[in-house]
Length: 160
Length: 192
Image (tube, rainbow over all chains, first blue to last red; front, top):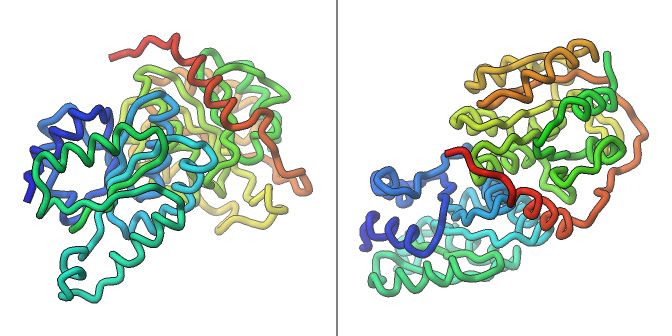
C-alpha cells in the first residue's frame, strides 16, 4: 500500500495548490501527511460544497483537487454537473470507492463500486481507476500527473 | 420593510473593489445598477453553491474582498457552508436576501418562512460579524463596516417578497464572464 506521505508529496509535486476534502476511513489516513505539507486540506461540510469551493478556487486560477468518497460524489451530482459542464472548469477529483477491493474479490455486496463507475460516466467525467494497494510509486506519479495535466474535468476512482 | 432592489442600490454605493457574486433574483437586478469587471453572475448555477464559490475565490486570492448575494432558499440548501466559512479569516461578505420565498419558481414559501433566525445560525456557526437589517436606513448604516471586515461577515437582509418576476438571465455567457473576471483579478496583489 502506498504511504500517505508519498501520495501527498506527489499531489504537491504535480501542481495541485489546494486540497478540498471530506475524509473517509481511507482518505482520512492522509491527514497527518497533509498537515505536514504546504497542501493543507480545506475542510468542508458536504461534498457538493467541496465542488463549489473548488470552482471558486479555479475562478481565482488556483489548481485545486477535491478528494471525497463516492457516497458524497453521488450526492454532489448537481454541483459536479454545473462546474464541469456549465462553467466548464477543469474540476479534478479523487473519488474514494468504498469496498472496491472487497467487491472485486467477491467479499462484499456493497453497491458503491457499481454506482461510482456508472455515475462518473453519467456525468461525462473522464476517469481512470487506481488501486493504491497494488500500484507502484511510478504508477502513482503517472496517474496523478495525468489528472493534474488534463485541461478538462477528470477523476480518479480510487479503490478502497 | 425594504425591497430587494433597495438592498442592491445601497450595495452599489458602498462597493469598492469587491468581487460581487450574484445568484438567483439578484442576477436580474444587479446589472441595472452595476457593470463592473468584478461582477460575476453565477448563472447557470447549482443552487446553494454561491457562498462556497465566493470562499474558494477568497482562498485563491488572499486579501481579495468578495461579496456573495444569496437568497434564503439557496442558503437553506447549504447551511453547512457557514461553518466552513467561519474557519477562515477572509474578507467574504455574505448578504442574505431573505424574502421567505422561492421567488424564481413562482413564490412558494421556503421551509419555516419568517421563523428561522439566520443571524443566530451565522453566529452559531462561528461568524463573529453578523448584522440584521429590515429597513433601508439600517442597511445604509451597516453596509460600510460589513464590507470592510478582514474576516467573514454576514448580513441578514429582510426584504419584501415579490411574486411574478421573470426568470433571471445573466447579461453575459458564462465563458465570457469567467474570462472577464480572471482578467480583472490579475491586477490583485495577494496579501500573505
